[in-house]
Length: 281
Image (cartoon, rainbow, N blue to C red):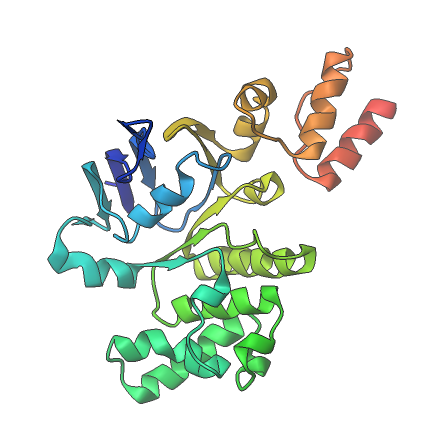
């Protein structure tokens, strides 16, 4: 069994439109996430990706099907505490997760509620703030920080709990480009240096290309999944389902349509420059 195992999960909100129940927000999803993997989940608004994210730490429970975290069933109430220690969830708006007037007090909130020894909390808070590059701001007021800095403090608050996995629900959606870069570099560092499992819910394709695996959702179902190369080479499929692709992949696809021989779809600006150099030669 995978570290996180999602088995034929269905979930719908208690909503009615025109006298009929709304379709399932998550509709028969089966997915495995391995320990240490960096998985990006993409899709347009309303596709079910945020709802799926909330199932990974038992914030939501399936109407049918099962979710297992390190072998524990999220529907087992006796395991909820352990599951939420194992999987930390960072929401889109960092202001919703900042609860204290001082940065280090905010980061300490989680381990304090877990009953961690004060001396250990001090160590965890310092390590978490250093991991996200916010240690020098430990005595600052969170409300005076930039959006990217706030989100990094929110991530530090989850890290202080010492989870094995961090799930982030569109953490850069409200940030400017600099804030996005700050958060993404933090996630890459946590995954590559600390071997932390990262699940990134995003609608930015240039963020998804950084992952080990990309899962594409549409209408509550998994449309396709694979490495970034495998997924973003399916340009026409993604477009049919109203999804964007990285600009470099879009350019390559248009060149292919014009008869240019390109053997690999580039995903980053660097790859695109290299590809164009080869084509022009």
